[in-house]
Image (cartoon, rainbow, N blue to C red; front, top):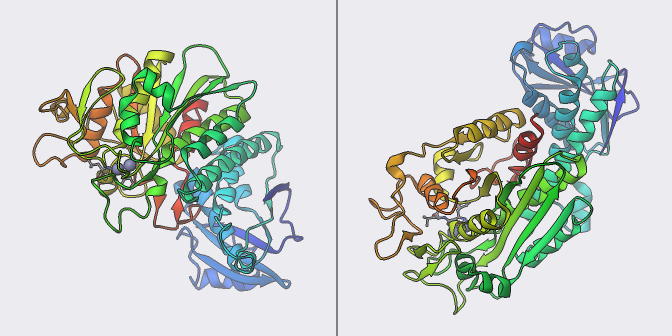
Length: 487
Ligand code: BES
Ligand code: ZN
Ligand code: ZN
């Protein structure tokens, strides 16, 4: 999609999309639209309502924006997302809109924010995973080719914001592609290959193969991988854009989670190609860091393997020794994410001494039950780090919600005949499932400031919304980039 900046509505485009705030003058609108507002056929105070009409033979959409004082940058993303969807539905290629210019006079948002959030809304809504449709079908599935955005003030900062938003949205859509792609394509080796594509002046890529992991004693990662025909990988993306210690971002990369011998049932197993969404978000974050030249040192870590049921697969009741020396009873082979992360976190801390570690993982079904698809869980003991992440979550609308990491929960993962169990040994075992998953991970971090993000519900959604089509969402990329950029 090409985004152009114009001083007035661009009549060359296929559709004109007029935003309308409650109490705005309607005189610029076609007369029948003015009449529709008067007769409340479209109510400008109800964000998202639309009215379609013609203006001198040109297709025209009036988009209600609600009350100006309630309008946020996320409403901007959503409004432009709605415009993209509406024009796609008309099977047309391009549109012009004045929504941004209605805001630029309000002075509530900076030019850069307006540019960034505009690009996010437009490009995220224009996404479609169409490669597996037949040629004929794919042709019917329109995407928008060109958008003219009306913006009146000096446009250098707006332009800069657009550029940032384009990088961010493209990276998010890249994650969506990786997650939507079937597990027979996106294997550990495939993701290793994608990582190596980023290698360059600012990014070094280092990979531990199975043999290296055996030598290093990364037994919990190897244990999960042992049921699969595909070799596991532990990939490090070392991005050096600044001074100081690394911030490590560690992403769960299970390219398919069958559950192992605690096999997942029908209705739960089908989406498990998405269990590498954390790793994909890490990969894309490093990509953005390099493209935007983020002035920080960031270490991307991707523990990659499948969780399968081959004859060498680990079994419930097995006991494995993690890289940090702790022994773990496998109470459930389906609680595999915490096992691969355990070794990844401990090894990363030992070898790289990061100041901060943040992990992203589709870790627990319990998190989907607790928080649904709109917001991820965050936990840990570093309140400042969590507050910083929460702020980035709000600003990017890649939302996170803090779960109570109570002292009372800290022994729930203690083992009976080993140091730890990979499922809770208290009560019935499933209570506070997301928190106990986080508690387990915390046992593999010593000094680093650490937070855990459970993106199980956020990464892959059955719902379709304004700038988020069904299935892979690309969750985590905007959160982390806003966090690093301090946006
Ligand atoms: N990958 C799943 C979690 C998941 C569930 C992600 C639904 C996305 C949607 C994870 O490996 C898992 O199976 N966790 C178990 C943990 C339990 C055995 C303690 C779960 O949530 O049931
Ligand atoms: Zn699992
Ligand atoms: Zn999993």
